[in-house]
Amino acid sequence: MSLLAEPRIESRRVAGVEPLRRRRVVPVSSSGYRRRAVHLLLVFVSLVLVIDALIGEKGLVKSMQARQHYRAVAASLETLRRDNAKLRDEMRRLNEDPATIESVAREQLGLIRPGEILFILKDAKK
Image (cartoon, rainbow, N blue to C red):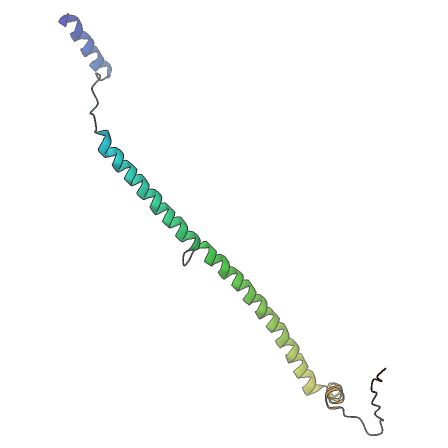
């Protein structure tokens, strides 16, 4: 029998096939706890990172609030620029246009030209 077994082993080695070997037995209890602990640690760290990315100092929520604040400030700035342009135009007209000066004097100061008659109408109570 030993003569027949020898050629088979050699033929396997020549063909590149390794003989079957026993695997080493690793204690399940210690590596199972380690694997579970590492898994829980990774889940915890991932959870902390996700929460920080969402609501942290530079998180998604703060970023969205900053964008909204920027849009509000930009709209306010545009409104102020339009008002500033209107006031600049009114200032230019008051400095250069005599008709505008007269109009403001009549409306705000109640002035009239010589020879004009001023009528004051009051509402009658019923």
